[in-house]
Length: 108
Image 1 (tube, rainbow, N blue to C red):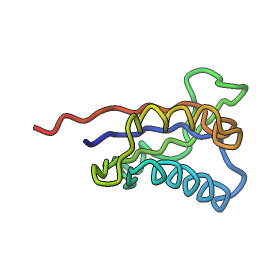
Image 2: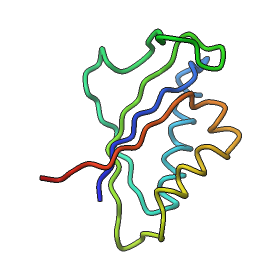
Image 3: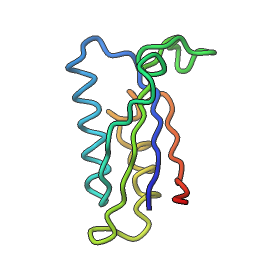
């Protein structure tokens, strides 16, 4: 099964801090049998953007989009639910992720 992941991240002080955060997110998905692939929609659609309304006192966010591949051989039961719980419960991730959306893709 394939999914799409959209993230709005808190603006990080450095690019290195942002890459560390994305690496941690990738590890969380990898632990549950998923592989993340960075999806560049359009350069102007990604990156630092002004938010329509403040989220946790933040007026800007960094948008990132990913294709998420599900490896059926290394899959664990209920993995996508466990990943979303991990994104919510991990203090480092939840403090740096303003919003996320995981969508199941239809493969036609």
